[in-house]
Amino acid sequence: MSKPSVLVTGADGFVGSHLVEYLQSAGYTDIFATTYAESEWLSAHLPADHIFAGDLTDSDHVFAMVQKIKPDWVIHLASLSFVGDSFSKTQFVMDTNTHIQYVMLEAVRQHAPGARFLSIGSATCYGPAAVDLDPEHISEDYPFAPNNPYAVSKLTQEHLAQMYHLTYDLDVVRVRPFNQIGPRQAEDFVVPAFAKQIAAIEAGQQDALRVGNLEAVRDFTDVRDAVRAYERLMLEGVRGEVYNLGSGQGVKIQTILDTLRKLSEADILVQPDESRMRPADIPIFVADARKLHALGWQPSIPLEETLRDVLAFERQKMEKEA
Image (cartoon, rainbow, N blue to C red; front, side, top):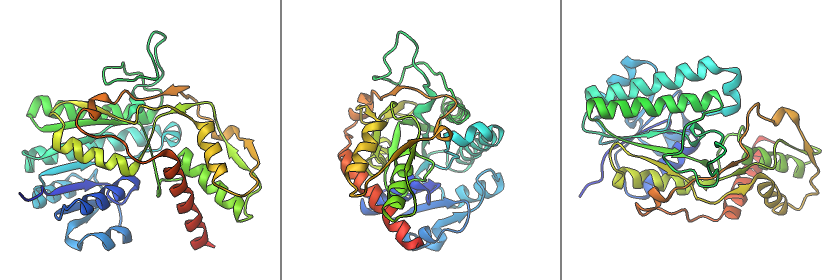
């Protein structure tokens, strides 16, 4: 039986690039990809006629693309994803993420109504825990309390996806990932931010590692495990349902820092940096992902291996830039 054709939006991004690589390794041969601008990375991995460069808020562009491809699966990753930036660019983040979601859903409704659509939300929609709830076991029925504009935009995206399922019977599955980490992640996120600074200290380009809140506890999943989860949801997820994506294990940011420092031979001085503190942060944030695990997915890559790979990537990038 042939594998489904897959449209991956945001395919040259952090998660998207790992997803394309995974799908190819798993035998998917009909993979289509979107990118905002021309992408050397995608051009090296996919045929030119499978790459669609353009603005996903442009309905004419998106409708023509979906009409041409008529994909069996749509894995919709494209989104503005920086929590910190969303405080200073609130309207832009809200407008862009909502518009992209609407245009993609409407294109599928009109031109590929039989496609399965994976709506990538965010666990940030849960926000801080109510006093009588457990922030170490956040299940899918946990109440919403988004405390940053990015989280609000992702919750809006998810509600749009569910509306298209309920109103138009689109085959929508929703997922709420917790923290995903791995090589190629942007330096706006805590793990690559630490790793880049350590690489700079090792190279004699920086004197100290500057940090924000080290007491926060988060649920980290290697992106290479996460993309397997997305495939599992496309294969086994129940239409209309929502699934948390996480390991179910909480790790303190201090532990991440300590492990990265252990992986370096440099003498690393740590300095607090107020500019790295968010206006609103959550002390503990850990997934109850048993619903996804019941579909047959489990994370498999140890945290130290992930951190070693991230540090190696940042070192290599620094060498190329030297």
